[in-house]
Image (cartoon, rainbow, N blue to C red; front, side, top):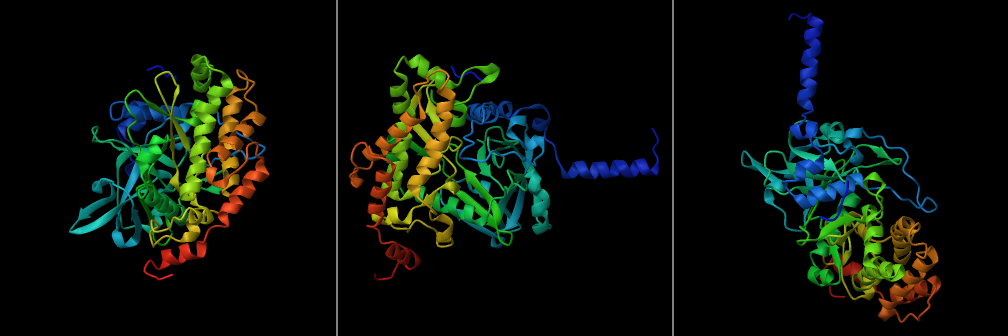
Length: 452
């Protein structure tokens, strides 16, 4: 492929060895953990995921816009659980009685990945990060704990790829878990509202025509199983990792924008240079326009706002790194519903599970401002910084102009004039929002049989 990455003992001694034996028995270490990187462990199981996790763990310059975002400085997490360490570690599976779990199944998932039957009773498989074992042992002291899975962190500390250690034929799966650690002064557990959001947005995703979105170049990483333990209200989410088409590869945008091993230039630079095209035309066509179009149409047609910063978007590329026009959006737990835009689109909330609180999923703030924050100030900022040395014509001003124009062009319903400024876009979206009837939409969701 063209994508390179690079005798006798005293009583005290006996007590010590007994203590060490018990300690090691509680913290099993797999053979893979001792000798293999995640990429090696996955090479024969799922070559595409082996390649993906190598990008996730090793090609990340962490290009940050420090004027808009706070840099994460404090990371209270052992090195073995950090992506850059490229370590494999065991993942706990805990068998919990169904009645103690709030479970959302919104998409197809193998039953044996979710449930286990024992003594005629069904239990939910609850996935626990080794760093969170102490936290969950308090709530599940009598549950059956097992560690037959190996796992590794992706670019996000709590988002893992996991696989059955003894079954090399089973495809690995993604799981976002509660992490009992402070990273950037935030406790990184997965809370009830995040789990409910993920469940609701998975339900939305499975209610729309995904093939239509795929034809537009927008793919989504589903999270078809979400669960939290009642009481602490903490849990996990599954993530679906579909196979890319033959000859295609998924690359996280932060990796696409980062220098590779041995200081090799970013893949985006190589692809742009190899294209022979005008730099501005290439960047606009392959990066700015499709992502801005996807965000705009999702908002207008569905009232759904994503979080398309460079960690949450994967670009599909061909063998030499050239974009195919398709992007995969992940982290449904970060998505939200703009109630006014959804109502204005004459859509309802029937997809939302009744167990979900609307407070968890409704957008708090301005969805258009979200586009600016995650695309302009994060995603396209990182792109610009990776290109500026080689293609100085890719300026902040030019990017902003193209962003505004693509919002205008992809929102014909709003009748925005050419050359629209930020204020014009904001006003146009507010005018559309006035056509909404959120109260009716909310009432219908609470009581689908009501006559309104």
